[in-house]
Length: 253
Image (cartoon, rainbow, N blue to C red; front, side, top):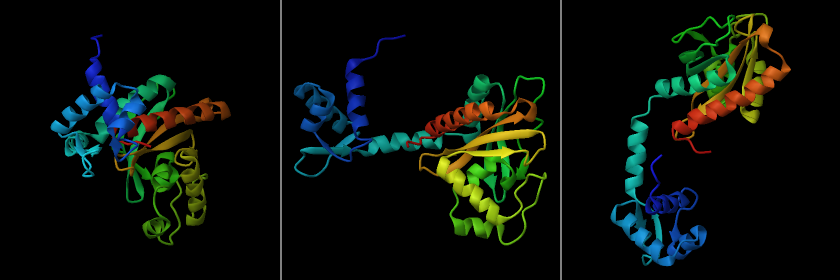
């Protein structure tokens, strides 16, 4: 591996301080990073010259982020592809757990699967990218629906009974609301034989750089391999995976 450049590392250290602080002075930066005062002033001058920082307007004694960082962030966001990034992270998660991993988005009351990686086990999920399922019957769908405000959820479903796919499916809005409240509180969802009699799933939401839930990741397991220990371990795995994908989309908790 090539040697890191100390001056660049210090410049990035300065910029990253502004992730948590809207404005900082040179003495504050010096104190936080423990760098020589002369070094900090030289780096600040360079960052201002390149547009990454600007004087805050208070006599030039304080600094805030400049437009150049925004331009780079916008360029990064414009080049992101949710399906591509989701597939890459799904492959990592599937390699870790050796179960089927899906990435899904919501379209109305349905989930559309945009990425999938199969388990290496002989017994595996029969599903496909592009398949649609009722959101209220799936772990992915619940993770997505839980981000909606109550009025939007009510408008989405109205007063009609919810279609069942199995005997375990949720079939009324009251029960769905209660389930989604729990999902919103704990940050993950589950499904036990609600869309398929032979499959259980756990899922977690994926956020974009604005903090909006734009997708969800699930791990699906045939019932013969499902138990409390598996659910606990896979829940942690899917939450890490969804968090990783969120970070790749620019999300910062």
